[in-house]
Length: 173
Image (cartoon, rainbow, N blue to C red):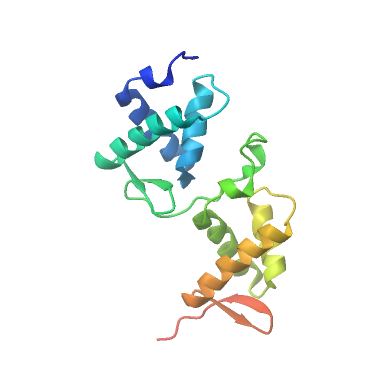
């Protein structure tokens, strides 16, 4: 339904809508939740007033224990920390941008790719992981972001990098 004044929407309704969006699309950036809500209200962009209103609804949902908000502005349903593999190919063009995909989702796709390949170069892993998410091209910027995420996983001991190949680390015990 179109609204004349977004800030007139009752906070309880916005909190409920935030919770439903997060449950369906987690992990999701707070900015995307604001864009979804604005779109549903018939608005084409998120201005400062709408952002402030949505931020208040998000904060209220967090305080009520309905959702979690991470330091990097990513929203999760309360108690959830596993990532679903989503295909972004079906998202509308304005939303289908790599910067709208959070690191947890990219890392999940990267780990699945490395696990399936057993051993794979970073550039091939980046391409394959992005393809899993519905992105057809691995730009230099996208490959660099995936490489940085692979490095983090190597530092955590989840991945290893041997002979120019990423591999899942073998647990020693």
